[in-house]
Image 1 (cartoon, rainbow, N blue to C red):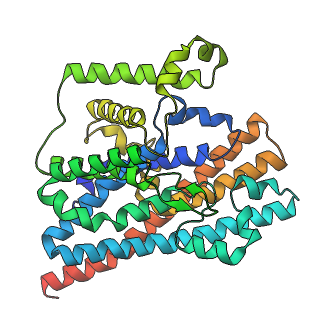
Image 2 (image 1 turned 90 degrees about the vertical axis):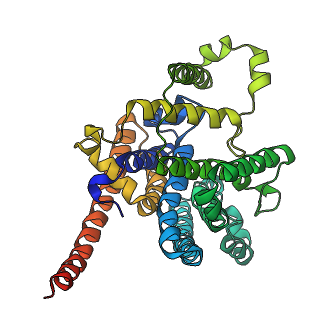
Length: 380
């Protein structure tokens, strides 16, 4: 296990930043969502979260695989899946209750429809059964079921990632292409729907994160190429203009009609290649300019974001609850710019406070164990 000083804080920082973006983006009509990634390119916080999840899963469980063997590593992965599943079900009930209570108090049934829980009240028993098998999900809860399914399949690819990462990545790419070509996806409830994040497509980004981790583990460094960096920056600039054209009318009017017919739709569900390429370009540029030893990652500005990244599961769940709370405040009470600012700042502040409390508790809990281990080593 790496010491805290050896920990790559970039993983925590960008995962924490993704969680902040997800929270802000989930509040409709929030003008401060202009500060998030989705407004300035073709990919968004979801790509960051899935890629880093694949990287960290490989980092953790490949070490367990090397030390304890496949069976124990698979058991650890499945135990983590169970933890995620229980957390998701708790979040499902909490969020559904929050939406239902809010709709009742304010006599606003649109909340139920907008958040995708209207079917739950039409047939609660059937909806609950489908919720238990991840087929029925309220709005904004799609990322966690995707992560559960990807991690559930992870033991099947872990040995290959450890020994033949390129071969596994090639197989993952073939599955990605087949899923897009044959429109493979998992069904949802009510009938006729499919998963918002197609796991057959998004698995490629998850596996890509794992392959990159193995490449770095083997001593591989960041490819140094001025041409690649220039191409990446140019693609990001083109994507920037394209993304702004969706939100600025006069800029959209300048876009050629043939360009739209060629590019659209840029599917998030099936992880469109343009989104994938945008994330790859963005990640390469960031890694070129942000080294693992960057001092600012340990500074006071980055510290709250890093804290949220380290407690990603709890912070994500809290962010889901807080985002709907923020939506309720803006819809029912006050939607002024000041109210939007207060909702955004207070929500992120609550996420940071919870993350720091959890970090403090984990450190305090580990300290007695270290003292006991030190006493045993000294023969006391």
